Image (cartoon, rainbow over all chains, first blue to last red; front, side, top):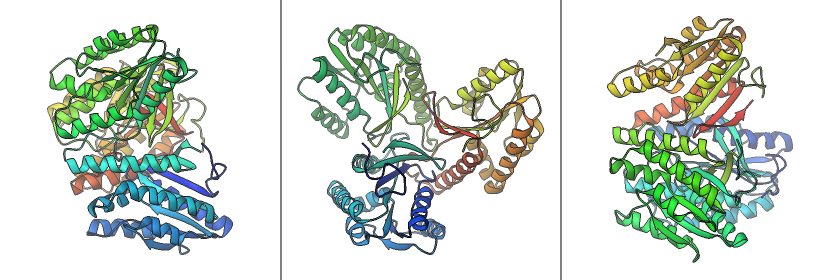
Length: 188
Length: 188
Length: 188
């Protein structure tokens, strides 16, 4: 069950941070990456899957960006996330993917095969876990704990996002569930 | 707090597996039942509460059915679940009820008294826990962690399902919360 | 991480109980307060944020009220919760705020500044934690674990409620996540 990342959240390895909207999961991932930056001089790379389709999204992206310190490099990867992870991973990097759930949305809207894309992402994270000195942090939303949605597309999205979380959790060295900013260890 | 099922998830006792949609809770329950089947030769019985009202539901049921190995016996119990549990339990069985939440839906649609039905189910599970050699596994959805639903029926459903979960959890030997396929022990 | 409330849920300190609808979080908070009342003779004060706008809400309030024993004093504080906490806290009291999420709703409907109000509440709880002999129990809903809501107001509410939970959790001595009536310790 435990892997390279088992001893400290700053160690190398694949770490999945699951949580609800405004649960503090992204802030916790940022704090872990910045601790790795400060302690070991690693270059933090932020892999953003969000696309600014409207003002609300632009404001959310800007607020997230303002939370990141100067050292961060930001890569936008709304669709080709596995390729972006592969390109960004290096001997001195700590990677943060934020977030899986928006990526799932983008894949569905672009009519891409989400299962194949998930396997490609896991392969890229596996390689990054070997190459990068710091952890590969992946943030994802848990979206299945409310009432069954009325519309079929939302139900399908819930299925896709839930399967993606299960696959990433199975591949991860460490999995945390974050609620109100506090982590609960699920694995590792 | 702990009961007959405290030592291993394969032991006899009532085990409740709570989780969201696509959380992996049913797959985990199947894996536990099949481990009991392999290790101790117990006959696994699948008590299905789902009814195939439409194509989407038929597809979900078929996918769940494909996950089960040949040894499984399937009993459909959309409404009379306590009676089905009582009939299915035997000295060589391991029972899996999947899931409580659809049963709650069916009870509401049929205008049955959900509280009385819940008590009857607990009584049947209590008897099964004494009779069956393997665990009685009960899968249920947590549906109360999203925004308050707009329509009154959904709010009432949320109340009924939530109370049912609380009653089963109080009666259970072991309770797990499953997220992204990973169990978190709540009790036992 | 741990504070004054770390040793027993009956000790003084700020305790946050997070959970979904019908998760049993209010019942658990009531039980903790009543245990403090029985064991140490403390006066339990119920700070209610709910307002009876319609029959459904009136019924919910009445059902919650029926759960409380005779010793309880009830204070209605739909908006001025920090002031009510300050007035209610005393050397022989155990306070229960139920719940933060309805307070967030009321603040939004009244167009009040939720962040400033949250800081005022934390200051009032800090003072109460010093003055009150029993715990200050605060109940709140986790509402961010479902599908993204269709309407913008619900999304904004989710943000406000989520940030409020994070701030209270950071200030609290103990935080529990309650599911199906069972607590899971997040902090303290």
